[in-house]
Image (cartoon, rainbow, N blue to C red; front, side, top):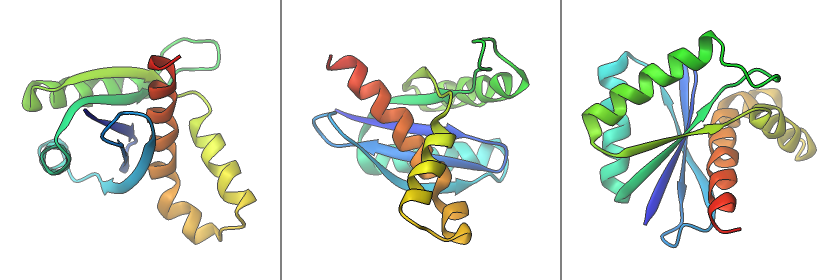
Length: 137
């Protein structure tokens, strides 16, 4: 069973996919946002290509656990995806995933330009791997 991980932002959506056994996550792409209909179509194509059965989307919470305006935007996108794709979407706490992604890239000594291009994909990988780890504990 393949599971898709999403890091949904205002300008881009980071995308990761699980291996067929659902044990490990790997970043695959970053989708540039072009309006909800086109965004859904891009995600739909990825789901079809990989045979996705479930989606895990990062829910941006404040450090105190409350939901802010960005959380509402993400929930809205997820509702549209679920309606149009008919695939279960699980919301996953994504606090500090972008920070962890930046730290990893700094340790790898990637240039600022390279970091900018892949941060969302890496954050999606952290989101999905966190979920996968939780179901196999």
